[in-house]
Amino acid sequence: MRKLALLAATTLAIIAPVAFAADAAAGKSKAAVCIACHGEGGNAPIDANTPKLAGQHEDYLAKVLRDYRSGARSNAIMGAQAATLKDRDIDDLSAYFASQPGELKEIP
Image 1 (cartoon, rainbow, N blue to C red):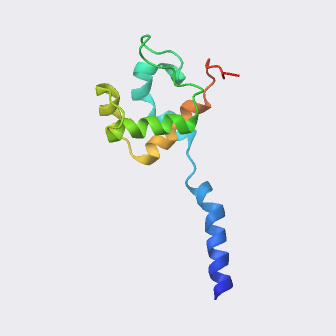
Image 2: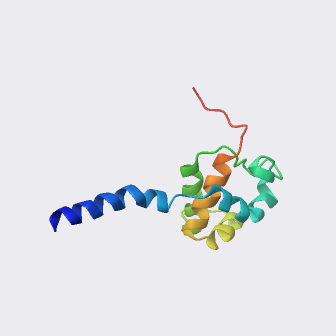
Image 3: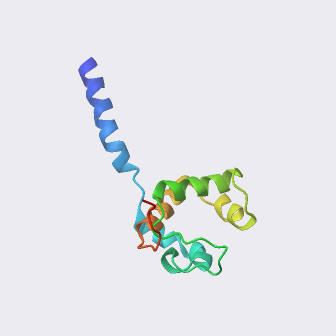
């Protein structure tokens, strides 16, 4: 019985990240509202105060969206947009924008 429980736990640990992995294609289908301000693929913001999302780190994008949703980070527009997002939406959108070719540079 103990071996069976260990096997089940090990299997779950291996497949859980795959089962819940973010889906960039799903993120693209959810990105219409984002594109209105951040531009197609997150590379053409409407003004200098709107950041480029393309090529940003996926975990950074997800954290920022969760912070806007919780109120930990404040912006009237982004707070209202993020308030409607579920965790899965945030993960998918973050995967999509992170997968886009960006113009951001790594600091050496």
